[in-house]
Image (tube, protein in one colour):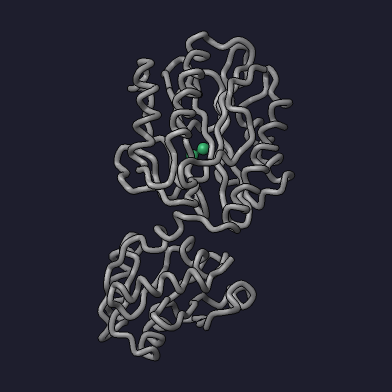
Length: 357
Ligand code: ZN
Ligand code: ZN
C-alpha cells in the first residue's frame, strides 16, 4: 500500500489551502496515510515532510508499520509533543479535522500552540479514500469471498429450533475459519417478524417453518470490510414476503444497473426507490440505498436522497434496498459493487434470487 503517495496527495491539498500542514487524528485516516493499525496515533502532513506521533505502547509497532516516517513517541501527552514539532518545523498555520476534533481538544491545542493559526479543514482524507486503488480492491474482494463462503456454509446449519443467537455465533466462527481477521460488525440474524427491523439484534427467537431469515454479515481483511445481506425462505413464508422479495430483487438490480462513474448517489437511490414505490411499498423502504465500504464499514460515498456527489471510478458502495412490514417481516438484499466507467461490477458471488430452504 503506497502510503507515501497518499501523503503526497494530501500535501498538495495542504498547498492549495495555503496552510503549512494538516494534522490528521481520525484513526482510519491515520491508517490510510501511514499503515499504522494501533489505537492511538496522529500524523502531521506538511508540504514537504510528515511526522507520525504515538505513545510509548506503540513505539515498537510503529517502527514496523510506519518505517518511512519520522516518529515522535510521547510520554506526557500529545499536546506538548505537537507543540514541539510545530516549533521545530516553524509552522504558522495548521489544519485540523473539524469533523473529528472536539471542542475540548481544540481548546487544548489552541492553548499549547502559540503563534500557530488553527484552520478547520473538511473531510480531505475521507474524500481521497472514496476511490480505491488496486490493492484496496483486492482486500475488499478477499473480505467478500470470505463472506460468500460463510453464507454458503451457514445455509446447512439452518434448522427448526435453532435460535438467532446460535446462528450469529456460528456465522462468527465461519467467518473466522474462512480467514477473517475480525467481523466487519456483529452479524444481523433476524427470523420471521424480527426481519421487519432493519438492524435487529439477534435474540432467543427460534427458527420455525415459514420464517424468512435475514442475514447481514461481513468480514475484515487487511483492515478492509465487506458487507452483504441475504433474505432466505425457510419453508413456505407468507406470500406477501415472497412478493416483496421479488420487488426488492428488482429494485436492487435497477440500482446496480444505475451505478456508474459520474452519477450521483441521489440518482442511484431514486432509480431503485422508484421500483419499490411503484409496487406500493415506498413507505416501507426506510433507509438510504447504500454506503461506501473500505477501512470503515460505513464511509463515503453514500447512495441516498441527500447525496449529490458524483461517484468516482474505484469507489465501492453497497446497493441494499429493503422493505420492512411490522408484524410480518422484511426483506433486504445487499451487495457491494465496484464503480467503473459506464457501469459497475458486483463484488460478491452469492445468488441474489430467493433461496428456498
Ligand atoms: Zn449490511
Ligand atoms: Zn450495508
